[in-house]
Image 1 (cartoon, helix red, strand yellow):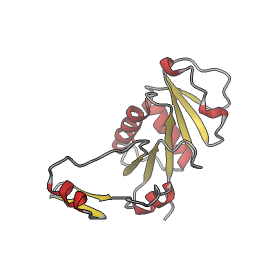
Image 2 (cartoon, rainbow, N blue to C red):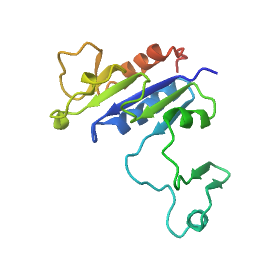
Image 3 (cartoon, rainbow, N blue to C red):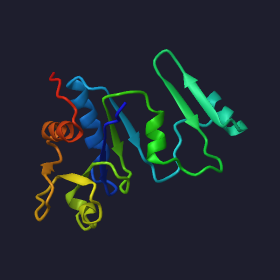
Length: 172
Protein backbone atom coordinates (compact mmCIF):
# COMPACT_ATOMS: atom_id res chain seq x y z
CA UNK A 1 0.00 0.00 0.00
CA UNK A 2 1.33 3.41 -0.95
CA UNK A 3 1.52 5.81 1.97
CA UNK A 4 0.46 9.35 1.21
CA UNK A 5 2.50 11.59 3.49
CA UNK A 6 2.42 15.37 3.69
CA UNK A 7 4.26 17.49 6.24
CA UNK A 8 3.57 20.67 8.13
CA UNK A 9 6.79 22.23 9.35
CA UNK A 10 8.04 25.55 10.63
CA UNK A 11 9.75 27.19 13.55
CA UNK A 12 8.33 27.04 17.07
CA UNK A 13 5.02 28.91 17.51
CA UNK A 14 4.57 29.33 13.75
CA UNK A 15 1.10 27.74 13.67
CA UNK A 16 1.98 24.13 12.81
CA UNK A 17 -0.35 22.45 15.29
CA UNK A 18 -3.33 24.70 14.60
CA UNK A 19 -2.93 24.17 10.86
CA UNK A 20 -2.48 20.41 11.23
CA UNK A 21 -5.62 20.13 13.37
CA UNK A 22 -7.61 22.27 10.94
CA UNK A 23 -6.46 20.14 7.99
CA UNK A 24 -7.40 16.93 9.82
CA UNK A 25 -10.90 18.37 10.32
CA UNK A 26 -11.27 19.65 6.76
CA UNK A 27 -9.91 16.52 5.09
CA UNK A 28 -12.03 14.36 7.39
CA UNK A 29 -15.08 16.43 6.43
CA UNK A 30 -14.22 15.58 2.83
CA UNK A 31 -14.39 11.87 3.67
CA UNK A 32 -10.68 11.09 4.03
CA UNK A 33 -9.23 8.97 6.82
CA UNK A 34 -6.30 10.98 8.17
CA UNK A 35 -3.64 9.98 10.70
CA UNK A 36 -0.95 12.23 12.16
CA UNK A 37 2.59 11.99 13.45
CA UNK A 38 3.86 14.78 15.73
CA UNK A 39 7.58 15.14 16.38
CA UNK A 40 8.52 16.46 19.81
CA UNK A 41 11.98 17.90 20.46
CA UNK A 42 11.73 17.35 24.17
CA UNK A 43 10.80 14.70 26.68
CA UNK A 44 7.06 14.23 26.72
CA UNK A 45 4.66 11.98 28.53
CA UNK A 46 1.19 10.88 27.53
CA UNK A 47 0.68 9.25 30.89
CA UNK A 48 0.26 10.77 34.34
CA UNK A 49 2.24 10.01 37.45
CA UNK A 50 0.39 7.58 39.68
CA UNK A 51 -1.74 5.88 37.02
CA UNK A 52 -1.51 2.11 36.66
CA UNK A 53 0.09 2.36 33.21
CA UNK A 54 2.64 4.89 34.51
CA UNK A 55 3.53 2.44 37.27
CA UNK A 56 3.98 -0.34 34.67
CA UNK A 57 6.45 1.81 32.70
CA UNK A 58 8.21 2.98 35.85
CA UNK A 59 8.64 -0.67 36.85
CA UNK A 60 10.51 -1.30 33.60
CA UNK A 61 7.97 -2.46 31.01
CA UNK A 62 9.31 -1.82 27.48
CA UNK A 63 5.81 -1.35 26.05
CA UNK A 64 2.52 -0.63 27.76
CA UNK A 65 -0.82 -0.76 25.95
CA UNK A 66 -3.77 1.09 27.44
CA UNK A 67 -7.08 -0.13 26.06
CA UNK A 68 -10.67 0.98 26.61
CA UNK A 69 -13.93 0.83 24.74
CA UNK A 70 -13.19 4.23 23.14
CA UNK A 71 -9.47 4.17 22.25
CA UNK A 72 -6.17 2.44 22.78
CA UNK A 73 -2.61 3.67 23.01
CA UNK A 74 0.72 1.91 22.89
CA UNK A 75 3.65 3.51 24.69
CA UNK A 76 7.12 2.28 23.83
CA UNK A 77 9.99 3.23 26.10
CA UNK A 78 13.19 3.83 24.15
CA UNK A 79 15.42 3.29 27.16
CA UNK A 80 18.85 3.09 25.46
CA UNK A 81 17.50 2.91 21.89
CA UNK A 82 17.84 5.79 19.45
CA UNK A 83 14.80 7.74 18.34
CA UNK A 84 13.09 5.86 15.48
CA UNK A 85 13.25 7.25 11.96
CA UNK A 86 10.05 8.69 10.54
CA UNK A 87 9.81 5.72 8.14
CA UNK A 88 9.78 3.32 11.10
CA UNK A 89 6.99 5.28 12.77
CA UNK A 90 4.94 5.46 9.57
CA UNK A 91 5.23 1.68 9.15
CA UNK A 92 3.49 1.21 12.52
CA UNK A 93 0.37 3.19 11.56
CA UNK A 94 -2.83 1.54 10.40
CA UNK A 95 -3.87 2.03 6.77
CA UNK A 96 -5.37 5.44 6.04
CA UNK A 97 -5.82 7.86 3.16
CA UNK A 98 -3.22 10.38 4.33
CA UNK A 99 -0.67 10.87 7.09
CA UNK A 100 0.00 14.46 8.11
CA UNK A 101 3.43 14.81 9.70
CA UNK A 102 4.03 17.76 11.99
CA UNK A 103 7.68 18.67 12.40
CA UNK A 104 10.47 16.57 10.86
CA UNK A 105 11.96 19.60 9.09
CA UNK A 106 14.74 17.63 7.40
CA UNK A 107 12.96 14.47 6.22
CA UNK A 108 12.37 13.97 2.49
CA UNK A 109 8.59 14.16 2.21
CA UNK A 110 6.69 17.10 0.69
CA UNK A 111 5.84 19.70 3.27
CA UNK A 112 4.31 23.10 3.80
CA UNK A 113 6.17 25.68 5.89
CA UNK A 114 4.14 27.74 8.37
CA UNK A 115 5.20 31.30 9.12
CA UNK A 116 3.94 33.89 11.59
CA UNK A 117 4.74 37.60 11.52
CA UNK A 118 6.19 37.61 15.05
CA UNK A 119 8.71 34.92 14.04
CA UNK A 120 9.72 36.39 10.68
CA UNK A 121 13.26 37.08 11.89
CA UNK A 122 13.88 33.31 11.60
CA UNK A 123 15.57 31.97 8.46
CA UNK A 124 12.88 30.70 6.03
CA UNK A 125 13.06 26.92 5.75
CA UNK A 126 12.58 27.14 1.99
CA UNK A 127 16.16 28.41 1.80
CA UNK A 128 17.51 25.05 2.99
CA UNK A 129 14.85 22.46 2.10
CA UNK A 130 13.93 21.39 -1.41
CA UNK A 131 11.06 19.39 0.13
CA UNK A 132 9.05 22.48 1.04
CA UNK A 133 6.41 22.72 -1.67
CA UNK A 134 4.29 25.54 -0.23
CA UNK A 135 4.11 28.21 2.47
CA UNK A 136 1.23 29.28 4.71
CA UNK A 137 1.71 32.62 6.46
CA UNK A 138 -0.23 35.20 8.44
CA UNK A 139 1.55 38.01 6.59
CA UNK A 140 2.49 38.82 2.99
CA UNK A 141 5.36 36.71 1.63
CA UNK A 142 7.30 37.63 -1.50
CA UNK A 143 10.29 36.30 -3.38
CA UNK A 144 9.35 32.62 -3.07
CA UNK A 145 9.06 30.13 -5.92
CA UNK A 146 6.48 27.89 -4.19
CA UNK A 147 2.76 28.62 -3.71
CA UNK A 148 1.94 30.87 -0.75
CA UNK A 149 -1.36 30.56 1.15
CA UNK A 150 -2.92 32.54 3.96
CA UNK A 151 -2.39 30.55 7.15
CA UNK A 152 -6.14 30.56 7.78
CA UNK A 153 -7.18 29.51 4.24
CA UNK A 154 -7.77 25.90 5.23
CA UNK A 155 -9.93 25.02 2.22
CA UNK A 156 -7.29 26.16 -0.30
CA UNK A 157 -4.51 24.43 1.65
CA UNK A 158 -6.54 21.19 1.84
CA UNK A 159 -7.16 21.41 -1.93
CA UNK A 160 -3.39 21.79 -2.43
CA UNK A 161 -2.62 18.82 -0.15
CA UNK A 162 -5.07 16.67 -2.11
CA UNK A 163 -3.45 17.66 -5.42
CA UNK A 164 0.10 17.30 -4.10
CA UNK A 165 -0.47 13.81 -2.66
CA UNK A 166 -2.76 12.50 -5.41
CA UNK A 167 -5.59 12.16 -2.92
CA UNK A 168 -8.88 12.00 -4.79
CA UNK A 169 -11.29 14.65 -3.60
CA UNK A 170 -14.41 12.94 -2.26
CA UNK A 171 -16.48 16.02 -1.44
CA UNK A 172 -18.56 16.61 1.67
